[in-house]
Length: 264
Ligand SMILES: Nc1ncnc2c1ncn2[C@@H]1O[C@H](COP(=O)(O)OP(=O)(O)O)[C@@H](O)[C@H]1O
Ligand SMILES: [Mg+2]
Image (cartoon, rainbow, N blue to C red; front, side, top):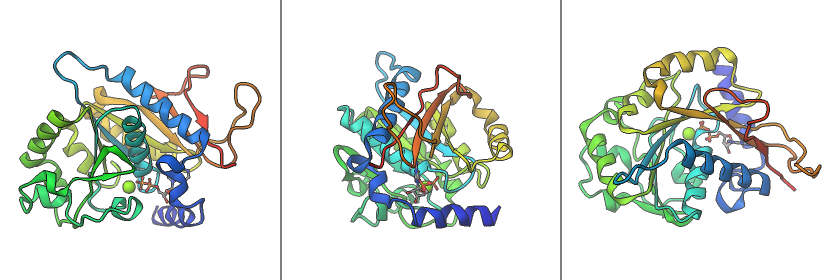
């Protein structure tokens, strides 16, 4: 297992480079796939009158499957669609937002949850799009699961619900730590990231078993690094990496909303 995780992170260093995987730098195909994910999210979580904000968690079975990349790009696409979005880096054990999004603010979620920063707005920063506000993980605390499950987290989400159309929470992997489940009560839906060619059936089974308690909240699966396919008109859309999305726990043969990214 440890070897596998190392392989995942090492291979990420030699990939296209983080910039090409985020926001406006995404290839046409990847960008289209994230837009499709955005549309499917609107269908899966329609707003009731009076409750306009939707809170969505993003998790996976183990580290390195593309949770943060998915959270960031989904947030970006929602922001591009005119939605006010708050992206929270809930994975306080393996934070990447500060470096990937080039954030200046050192303080983050851990500081709010530990009561070290009373003013939440002070630690919010804008990234990638004017409609997108980010709360990074902050300094790594000794007790992330406890903090995520705390009353301060409940209050933070309540506060953000009043300000945003979407709150996206990038969470740690469920097979490794319990953090993602401690926050499940505060979210409206959970997206499960699966890495094509890497996540094993056993890892996914294990994750689904752990998530059984929040079964009703699981919205579907996002498949990262999906293999390229030909476009509708035979045009080659993808070259190396792709993204996909499936409904209700399995991808149907015809209903799969999967599409591939282009590196051309
Ligand atoms: N669809 C993808 N195609 C290619 N590389 C990806 C993809 N999604 C993520 N990555 C890369 O894989 C590495 C791990 O992704 P990340 O989103 O940080 O995973 P996690 O948050 O699940 O640990 C990063 O270097 C990222 O750039
Ligand atoms: Mg991550």
